[in-house]
Length: 240
Ligand code: UDP
Figure (tube, rainbow, N blue to C red):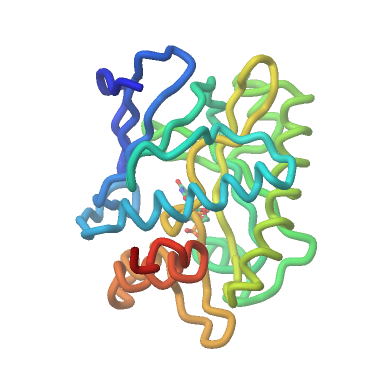
C-alpha cells in the first residue's frame, strides 16, 4: 500500500489517500486540543497509545459482529481503514454523569444513568458542534430516519460490548463519542475509540485516565494513556 496525499488533517489525526481508492490511512498524531481548539498541546507517544487502543477496540467490536472501517495497522500510529462517507453526527453515549451534563442539567458527577443517555451533536466546527435532535438531523438531511434508528441501535450495542470488556480491565466508561459512515449502502462504525474520545475512570480509585487529565490539568496525560494501553493492549508492552 502506498501512502499518497493528505486528504484531511484534524485536531489529533491526519487522513491520507492511498493507491487503493477504497482505503485510507488514518495517522494518530501526538497533538491534542480541548475546548474547541482553544487549549492545545503535544504529548509524546499519545498518538501511538491511542492508535493501539483504537485498533484493539475496533477489532473487538468486529469480532462481536459490529461492522467498522478498521482494516489493519500499517505502523504503530497508522491505521488502514475503509473509505466511508462520514455521517456528520457525533453520537455521544453516557452511562455515568460527567462533564457538561452536570453543568447543563441537575445531574451529579458520578451519578449512574440507567438506561444510558444517547445524544447527537452536529459535527460542524463552524457551528461549534451544537447538540441536535432527530428532527434537526432529518431536516438538515444528515441521515434518514432508518439510518438514525440503525445508528441508535448500534451505539447501544457497542456500549454494552465496551462496558463489559472494560469492566474486566477495571475501567468504568462514563461516556464516549462515536462516528458512523456509509459504505456500500450499510452503516459502519468509523473514526476512533480512544482516550481522546472516551472518559475512562479507574474502577477502584475513580481516577480519570483520559483527555480530562489534559482538559483539567489533572496530572500526567501520557502516564494516564499508557495505563489504559497497559490494560487494553498489554501485548505492546511485552519485551520482544
Ligand atoms: N467527545 C469527543 N469529541 C467531541 C465531543 C465529545 O470525543 O467532539 C467525547 C468526550 O471525550 C466525552 C464525551 O464525548 O467522552 C462527552 O463529551 P461532551 O463534549 O458531550 O461533553 P463534556 O466533555 O463537556 O462532558
